[in-house]
Length: 495
View 1 (cartoon, rainbow, N blue to C red):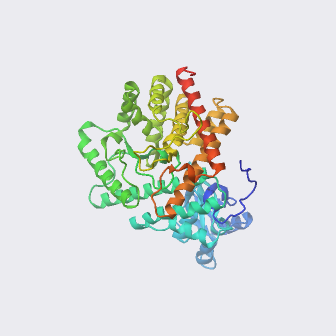
View 2 (cartoon, rainbow, N blue to C red):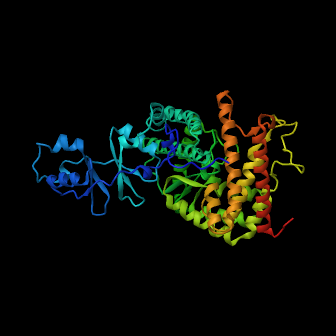
View 3 (cartoon, one colour):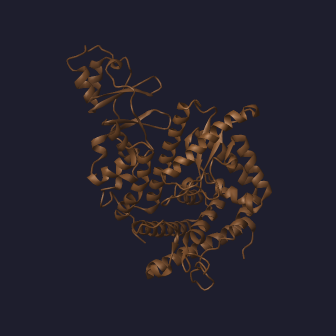
């Protein structure tokens, strides 16, 4: 097992892609009221040793910014000392959220041509200042090229090129020994940004075509690996819509709007490289486009039926995450599902039985279970179906049973450890197995992309050296043990 690194990564050329804005905050620039005289502003900037100040209202929300450029162009020798700050500030002020990725903030500064970005907390209050020069310490030209490709360009064709940049970036990050889970989070984050860009573009096109603004509140959800923050390369479309409740009399008008939106969204996502889901798990399908009340009723219906079809639909849906729209709708639905799962043990037992058909890929005598002669990938291990999905489903069931709302694998493991559901040693083994599978799949998909082949999850045992074959067997053994433990927890069956 690789030892944990202390301090900065040894090759920081692209390590900033794993950093958040909050990791690179400069000292807080002075926050000043809009009526402060310019003479007082300059004194506050000097005393703080800062290069800018943020003008805020009485709720500590940003109204504008005054930088050294504004001082040179608008204040020095041009206005009286008593001139209020709001006469010389730059407004509107561009901002970034503390939880956003650092590369996204740098790309935003490159695109806007600014060197300072006030950083906001979750309440919209100024938390600090991001300085362009300090953010790029250690970044080389290739890093800036990655950032530009991921953030600066607009338009459908440019958005499509963003997806093409992911493999190159992932390869660089692997070379720098960045944890695969962080690379997956980054890939997923970029994909979420693509969803949001495409959705915003579709809303704008609809407004220009006379549809107007969305008639009710909405939230676009992604599911599956996107909902868990664990994308590999080229995931297909798995998404749905939550709509605010509305009168039945308005159904044709409101649903017609979101049907048209969904149709355009799916076309554009397909254009930029997200294949349509073969099972039609997309918001154009009324099954995946509902009001909040309808979603609550639907999930209760799934829980009550317990059929294989109902469990399969619930299994797809329960890992959702919002990407654009009113996040409160997603939060309310998540709270409903949490209570539903905790109060309905038969729901979890039915989901468990549905997953039993996907066994772990080890035979009775410890050999790999491979694809049969009727498969295009005869002799290959389906690492997704016989390794990754059994792990994900077991952790999902434990999380649902104990009211854990996190959807990511690592976050679920940590939450279950903190609750005492899983002991530290079990958590270490399960996380090591998860990391091993993710690393194996990511490297396999990168190799296929280099050869011009479509990424997949089929790996031939002969392609694994002795160490990786042994590592895969250990991971599958751990996953099988976890599944047995979850079965016992949910059913009392220890056999």
